[in-house]
Image (cartoon, rainbow, N blue to C red; front, side):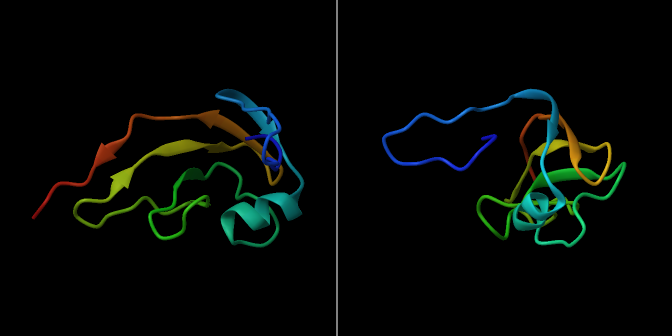
Length: 89
């Protein structure tokens, strides 16, 4: 979602291409400070719903989904990869 959703209202969703948010907005989504890390890959967080992280999940049974690559502190090139399950040991 490009913006915060409100119940009973529509929200704009972007599936590909660049997404620009402020560093403060990215900080809320990543849990980091200063926005995105340039050239870093971001994945859905296995630990916190609704967050993204630079660390791909590695625990057996967790799912790995790439969301995109940071072009700058404020721009993420959305490149949603296939979702893969980490194999059971």
